[in-house]
Image (cartoon, rainbow, N blue to C red):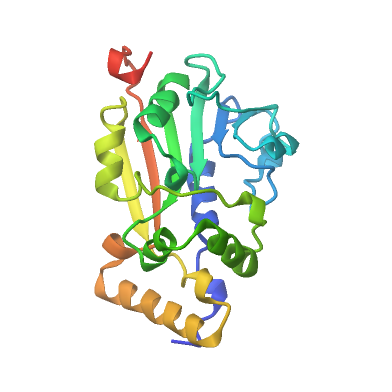
Length: 243
């Protein structure tokens, strides 16, 4: 088990990038929520020079994103300063766990998407031990752990709520927001990297990884939820979508 080569593991961001690559088209307008400054495992937007990329992020540093045409900050009410039906794709990588008001957030995603548009996301599974530990730890501790194990700047670690972080919670929230064709995949893509700072932690992470893969429990207790949800192509916006 301990000799399993790291090259055989799929990183969470690699699986997410593959999901985006299957969906994105050169003619698309894409809104990336929580885009950051593009420094942490960014999607290779340089390969899609004709895509219009807009960012939405409360952090002023996100304006330094190298590929975004513009980065907008949400208003105090949570509204995104974008026009209705302006985008083909809305992307959210490790954003849902930070959403305090899921209904308002998903209303905004549905509002800016054109009929038939898609919401693609990667988010932690709240049932995973790492997520359970994260919910118990102060934000200051999480900042130190992420900086030490994943090289994430402490200023890029934000409070978490985990209100959209199980398949059931996602389906219950996405449907009323107007989304259909909801596809969710829960995976343990690699041994938990947060435990890799010491040898016993690395052993424990690998043991958990192998146990989930062998017992078929990955779909319940895996670390990452990859998701895609679409608006109906002939959708007429109703009051509950906020349009």
